[in-house]
Length: 237
Image 1 (cartoon, rainbow, N blue to C red):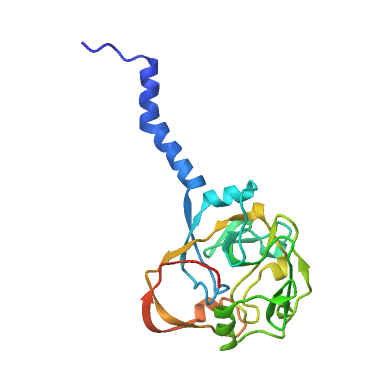
Image 2: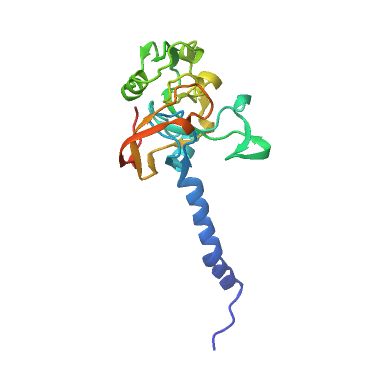
C-alpha cells in the first residue's frame, strides 16, 4: 500500500504543476523578448505601418541597470517623457479609455549622452557634423524632404547623461514627433532595442508617402512594385 502523501509532497506537486510554469512565464515575459507593432508612418522608409518588431527585454533591463548603452542608429521602443503632456493619450486602437497613458513609440537613436544635436535645413548635425543617413536622405530627397519648417531647423541640444536623442526616419513636414519636440529620452523610459522585423512576411517593394502634412499619413501611403521578403535584422540607416 502507498503511504499517504505528506505536506512536502503536496507542495512539490503544486510547484511542479503551477509554480514552475508561472515562474518560467514571468521570466520570459519580463526578461525574454516581446513583440511590438509599428503604428504610423514616422519611421518610413526604415519601417512601415503594421510591421511587427522583436525587442529583447533583457537588454533593456540591463541598460536601465547601467550595464551597456544604446548605439547611434539603434531602433528603440520607448515612452515619451512624462513632462510631454501632448504625448499622453486616451485612445487605444480606436477605443477611448477613462485614463490617459504614455503610448510606446518607435524611433531611431541619433544622439548619445554628451552629443550636441541640431537639425539645419533638414540635415541632422551631431557635434557639428552631418549625420550619415544614406538611405533616409536619398528616400526623402526624392519625395518631400522638409527643409524649411521649425522641426527642420532646430536649436542645438546637448544630450544629458543617461539619455538619448531620438528621431523618426520620416523627414517630411510633420512626419515625426520626436526629441525635436519632447527632448531627449531617459534610459529609464526605453523598453529596449528592436533587433528584427518579423511581420509581415512579404511587402510591396516601394512605399510612396502622401506628403500632404495631414493626419494619419499611414492610411495614404501608396504601395507598389513586386513583393519581396520582409523579415530582417534591423541595423542602422
